[in-house]
Structure formats: C-alpha cells, structure tokens
Image (tube, rainbow, N blue to C red; front, side, top):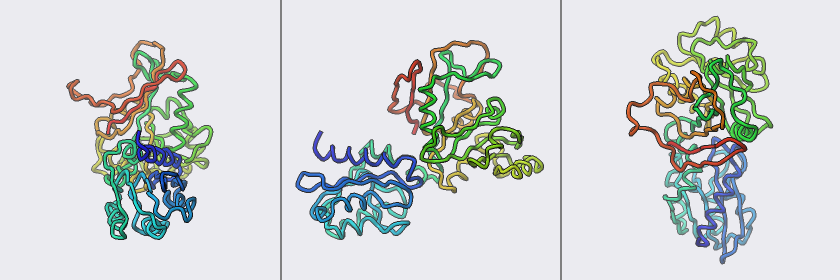
Length: 364
C-alpha cells in the first residue's frame, strides 16, 4: 500500500469515530502530511462542532503550511453551523488536497474543489474510493433522495423462522448477537416495528447501554390501536414514540395516543398500500433529517419494505436452532416471481457471534 493510500485509510478510520454523533452531517476525517510526516489529524466529532479539517489544522498549527490534506469528503465552501473549511485550508497555506469523495450536498457539490483550485491549491479527486463512498452512503442518500438510510435487521432459526407457531421468539439469538443489535440501535435516528411485533413482544426498543443517540421508536400501526398500557406508551416520556397511522385511522384512537404522550403521524390519503405508506413515512423522516433507521420487523413490515425497494442494508442473525411448524419467516410481502431477480447483498460479511452466524451487507 502506498503512503498516500495509508493516509487516506487513516482519514477514513478517523471519520468513523463520528458515527452516531454527527448526523445529519456526514462523517469526515482529515490527515495533514508535510515532508512525509503526519502533522495534523482530525475528524468531525459532533453535529454543530468543528469539521475535520479545522481539527487537523488546529493540531498542525504552522506546520500546515505547504502540507497535503487527505480528506474523506470535499471540503465545504458555504457557511453553515461553522465557517467554510475551504477558507481555513487556504488561510493555513495548504498546498494540496486529496479528496476521497465529492460532496452530494447541492450547497457544496464541486464548489469546495473550485474554491481551492481558484486559490492555487492542487486538488486530486478520487471518486472511486469505495471505502469513503460507503462511509458517505447514508448522508448521500439523504441529500439526493430526501430519505434516510434503511437497515433491515432480523434474527431467525436455522430453518428460517422468526418465532414459533405460538409467536414465541425470546430468545432466538444469543447474547453476543443481541449486544450487536444494541450497538446498532445506539447510532440510529429511529427504530421501526410493526403493530404485530409491538403487540406480541411488548418491546421497549431502547438502547442498552445508552449509545450516541436516543432513537425515536416507531410503530407502523395503520389504525392506531397500540395499547395505552404497552411498554412503549408507558415510557414515551423517556424516549420518543411515534405511531405511523393511515389517513383513515380513528380520531378517537389517535387522540388517546397523543394524550398519552405519543406522536401520531398519519400518511396522506393517497398512500393506500403498505408500500405507499412506507415511502410516505420515509419522506417524512427525511424531512426531519433522520439519516439512519433500523427496521426490526416483523415479516409483513419487512416484506412491504422489500416490495417498495427501500432496504439499503441488511443485518441478519442465524441461530443454530430448529423449531419447525408454520412459524413466520423474516420477509413476507408480494415477493419476486423469478430467482434471477433476487436482490443480492453486496460485499457481504459473514462472521460468527457465539453460536450464531451474523450476515451483513448492502443492497444499494
């Protein structure tokens, strides 16, 4: 690996430290190198805080003059919560900037690069940096589609069941797998389940131990019948709860939930099918600047999501257990007619967590 590739790898490693803390901003890392030596490092640590370039320049001080900046994302050229990073790089006398990804934000896209070049700074753009692009993907989706990144998660037995024929599902996966799920939850803006899961399991959907974010707990409940004595409703003052209902949900039920501290969002009247309501909800969550949401089931919910073509990433835990019978599988919905049209995980990673097999990868 070349020294430049190593510096980019380090910038990406730094950027990941901001995961869960910076959204809806992107994760960004920066490494400053002068005469072959690293003189400054930084990453975007929290939403509203200094950007990666500012952190690295602060560490480098006067040594930044004549250096090369390796950044995972095109430096910003507009005034947001902080001043533009292009101005800081120019003022510091940086001689060259290596950009791993262009910024998909319409306020930036290309403007940062142009500002640096206009100041006489050499800029190299590496649009094929797969690691940086993967890091940027949730932010890029929010910027380009107005919708959050959707992660589907489930745990199933070796014979493909989410629960027994009586609905019992605790616990399919082991402690190690459940710990990973809580780590995932801790960086999410929202956790989504269907009404059936909420009724059957009466879950809390909280993060244990607490993570970087406190996700909104969302129940897909077309008629707003979530029980007022459920754990979700009773703990709505501890973490937000949102019931996503249909336009024709009974007003008496919506009012009762609102009185109990639950937010009720109703899909537009045109959103009749489950897939339509999903897409309308994703639009709403995007308007709220949610970047990552975790969908934990059940089978109808995940099926409608797959039918809508709205799953971006999958985390599946397969336990070495057999239960047989007519228990539900992980994904229902309309499904596909031809195996040739099956959606395939890209860059799938398969590992073992205790007795369980953990499969994760992306569909987009």
